[in-house]
Length: 70
Image 1 (tube, rainbow, N blue to C red):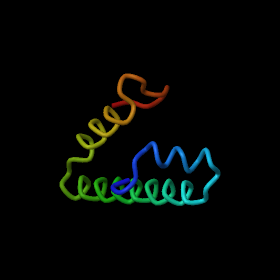
Image 2: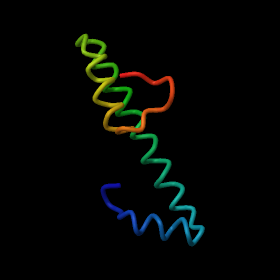
Image 3: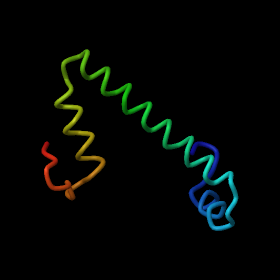
């Protein structure tokens, strides 16, 4: 994500280049690792519920799925 634009990655997907899938996988894995690190830190700081609220608000905005509560 730091070295490639969305347009370039989109081009890779449209051209069926394996690099597009590879870059998307790297991005997704990094997102999950960062999120888990933030969850761990918020649990240690006893701020998990604040983290949860801010994460869900950023991730879903006003479109929270049914059953998900802040």
